Amino acid sequence: MAAHYLSKDVSFSKNMTDHTIKAIHQHPAHGYLCITGGGASGLSRLLAEPRASNTILGADIPYSSTMLSSQLGGTLSSACSEDTAAMMAAYAFERARRFSKGSERPLFGLACTAALATERARRGENRAFIAIQTETAFFLRGIYFDDLTSRADQEAVLADLLIQALSQQFNLHRGEPSTDGIRITDNTVTASIEWQRLMSGDLAMFGTPPSIKAVFPGAFNPIHQGHQTIARVAETRLDYPIHFELSVTNVDKPALSYWHLERRIQGLKAAGSYVITSAPTFREKATLFPSACFIVGADTILRIDNDRYYASPNDRKAAIEYLASQNCRFLVFGRMIDGSFNTLGDLNLSPHLRQLCDEVTASEFREDISSSDLRAQT
Image (cartoon, rainbow, N blue to C red; front, side, top):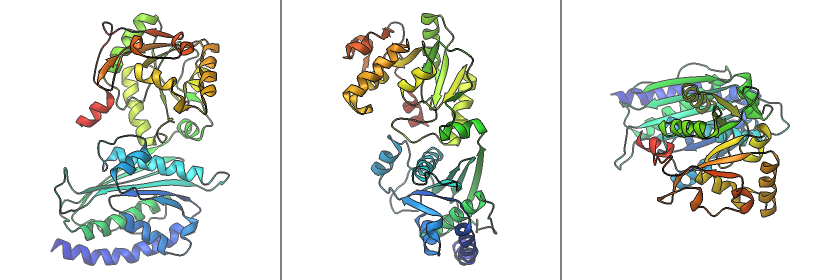
C-alpha cells in the first residue's frame, strides 16, 4: 500500500520538479556534481531540460569504492555516510571553482551518496546523503528509507529530493516532494567571512595570537587523547604553549567542507589554543610561523622528505633550505609505519632535513591509536 501510494505521488512530484529544474537553469549559479550509489536519475533529469549547460559544469559518477576513494584522497570507512557526502561536496566545489576561474557567477558543489535496496546483504539501513557546498554555506540532508523497500521508488524519491535541495540553496524551492515512508534530517552550516576567505585563498590564517613558537599541525579528524598527550609532552620539551594548526586545504585531499571545518573547530576549542590556516605545505607554514617548532609524527617528516610532494628533487631541497632560513625546527614523535613503531632514529632522512629535527623517544611517548582507527570504530 505504501509503495503504491508513493509511486502515484512520485509521478505528481515529477511535474513539480520539472518546473523547478527550469527555474534552476535560469538561475546564474553553476556547479559540479559527484554522485555514487544512487541519485544519478536526478542528474539525468537536470541534463534533460534545455539550458542544462548553464547550470552543470560537469559531473563524476565514481561507482566503485576504489574510484571514490581515489578521488577523495584516501580510504573511506563507508562510501555512504555524512562524512563521505561532505567530502564529495567539497571535491565537487573545488572542481566547480577550477573550471570557472574568472567567473563572477555563484558556484556550488553537489554530492549524493546512496545505499539503496539491493539483493545482497548490506551493513546498515537503506539510506542516502545529499550535500551541497557554496561559497557561503553548506547543506547536508540525510534520507532514511524506513518503509520504502523498492529500489526504483527509492531512486525516484532521491532524485526529487536532490533537485529540491539544489533549488532550495538558491531560494527557488517550489513545493514538497513526497516523503511517505522515509525520514529526512537536514543540517546547514553558515560560513563566516573568515572561513570564506580561507577557502578562496584570500586569507592565510585566523584565530592566532601575535606570536606562535610551537605549532602542532594536523587534520584532527577527530582530535583524540593521543593528540592531547603529544601536546603535553611537546610543551614540556619546548617550554612554549602549543597551538594546534588545521589547514583547510590539503596536499593529498580536497579542501575541507564547511561541515567538516565546523566539527574540527569544535574539537580544537575543547582541546586548547588553535589556529586555522590555508597553508597545506610546510613551506607555507614556515612563512606564517617563522622561528617556530613544528610538532610532527615520523610519517609526516618522511613526507616532507619525499620527492613525490615536490615539482622536482631540487624543489624539495629548496623547500628544506627555506625551512632552515626561516629558523624552523621539527620535534618528531614516533608513529606506526607499515606495522612497526618508528622514531626519528629509525628513519632515513636527507642530512639537510635531519639537522632540523629533534627526537621524542619511544620511552617519552608511544601511542598506537590514530584518528583513522577511531573513525573505523564509529
